[in-house]
View 1 (cartoon, one colour):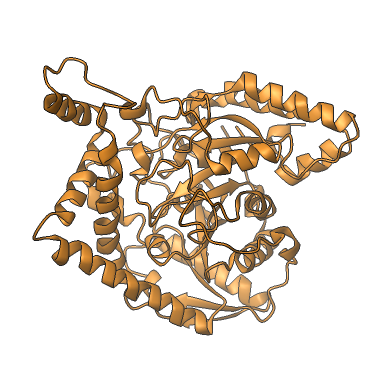
View 2 (view 1 turned 180 degrees about the vertical axis):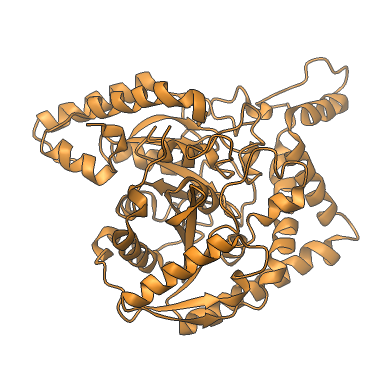
Amino acid sequence: MQLNSLTAHELHDKLVNKEVSSVEITEDVFKRIDQVDDKVKAFVTLTKEQALAKAAEVDARISGGDKIGPLEGIPVVIKDNMCTEGVLTTCSSKMLHNFVPPYSATVVEKLQAAGAVIVGKANMDEFAMGSSTENSRFFSTRNPWDTDCVPGGSSGGSAASVAADETIYSLGSDTGGSIRQPASFCGVVGLKPTYGTVSRYGLIAYASSLDQIGPFAKDVRDCAQIFNVIAGHDPKDSTSAEFEVPDYTSILTGDVKGLRIGIPKEYFIEGTDPKVLQLVQDAINKFEAMGAVCEEATLPHTEYALPVYYLIAPAEASSNLARYDGVRYGYRDETAEDMITMFKRTRSEGFGTEVKRRIMLGTYALSSGYYDAYYLKALKVRTLIRQDFDRAFEKFDLLISPTSPTPAFRFGEKADDPIQMYLSDVFTISLNLAGIPGISIPCGFSNGLPVGLQLMGKPFGEGTLFKAAHAFEQSTGYYKMKPNL
């Protein structure tokens, strides 16, 4: 039996029944990494020694008769923009090539407290800026379904590692679609939670009002279990929401009768792959067959989401990335004869092309004379976008759309055209601007590549998302299909 291909809840049952040990599961995962990661390239760093030590610790607890939690002894991968004490955290950038944090992110601490086994750090687009994981300083991660195609981004390594069974689940971050779009491209489940439900403490910031950490999983039940652990208020994060965290797995009844689902007409547009549209329509038909009520909805300011995002996110990035100056930590040019030259060289050599592009865009948008014309106006339109969702959710429990306009594209296909690359996030960006939750689940295949279905929920409405996603997943079985590596 290949333990690495099972879900976390299946492995938990086996651990409780003493059919397998956590060390066996962890060794199986590392064996799989040895077999396929030269093709997939999902990892920046592996932590095998620490992982096996943690697994042995869990096994000792089990043999001592202790009860274990649902994620205890189960391997996980962390995106490389989340601080891990004593373990290299690079953001896939030359700027942080030697950064070893003295503390861990809150989500990492929560997983460690829940007994999770961290097997490594996942490759990503540099500083989470990209939609293909082609912007990594180290190497491009490949899509396990077709290694000539991208896995999506920026959390490409996190998504690909789950799809390739190199881990049981993983964490990513989502600023404009960076969990949902790779989940769609790699055929796994990916959740972007409501802004503020998961602590951002220890997440290396890209755009602070948009960034949110979330899980990648092999099925919806796992996704709900992971969210049970990582969600909740954190006093270390001033944007963290105070709310009661329910047991999200108790909501997975498989029953969607009477659920009101809106179909936003602005998300079914020209330029979307016809096969993607067909699969999403099939999913809508499936929901109706299960008893949900599906009707057209409208989000009239959707067309402004992309320009608004590419003003707000780069502006926040310009501010956040100003701290990388070569003085305190990270990369530093050692050849400069004075401090100003050192700053300039450190930043021009330490950052990649896409990061520099976004810093310059953001600095321009915030500059004197342009702030009111660009950034302030973008904030006002952001409010209109959020109000569109508020109005839609007065009538509907959920909204439904494609996750991405296309399946995974080939390497280099959009690399020279930033606008085309940015358009691959056209259906995901609005949710970050509005702060609402969204989940991507597999809904079929186009030319052998996975296609994702996006469900969008009310603020703090993750329970309804899980319920609907689980019912669809169990009635179709796409989540059980595996790439042939």
